[in-house]
Length: 126
Length: 154
Image (cartoon, rainbow over all chains, first blue to last red; front, side):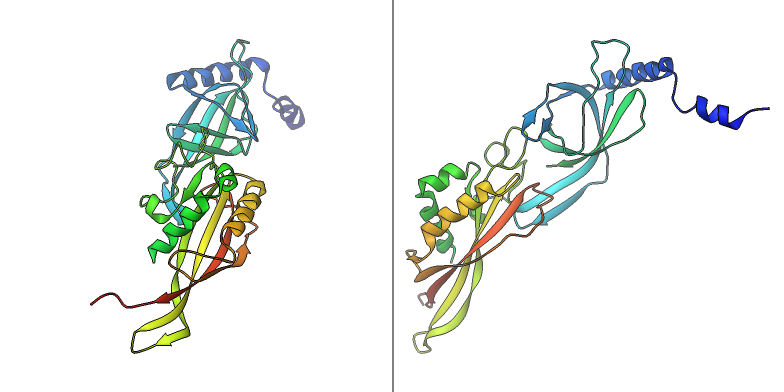
């Protein structure tokens, strides 16, 4: 009979081979539509990174005292733990900003517990 | 009335330290399109390479209201006051904003503009929040402008 405690302990962390497989798949997805970004963290520019950016359709515009800004949401896909050491881990944190295609992206949250890949949700301002 | 803004902008542009601080520019509504301060409309001037707002000044005019300190019904002359609002922006912190506010005070308080009477500082407003859309900290500095409204030529 299955020992539930053993089963829970065994699924607490994925085998390394599984994570690497996920990273390979994630990197293939990034390479389908790669974008090179330079992240600004505080006042520091990070090295250029290759990610995939997918925008949502939930656009809105807001008019404040300074003018009108158009916003949409986006998801930024990266990779983590790729078996090829020449593929660096994607480095994104909440508050990071980068410019792409004439819009400013601000990372709002980086999804936790995503073995092999990075999934960051961003606010896009134009 | 819009000449008040143009004159105020001219006065501010004559202040070299202010121009040096306001790397994103000094604007009135006539300088901006329908979207105002916007990354698509002003990508290289008001925003840096990362599309973060640069320190800048955006001056507006709050419409004049009569105060009847002067009144001549026969000549249709009335005293009025308007407020020039100087909206100051920067990406983070208030260092540039404080510097710009100080220079604007020096340029405007206790002076006159070509089409106005006395100009005086009327207070600052610094909300403890960011402008989430411009992604900026901001402050508004108000300057009260006294003027005389006269009728247009027949």
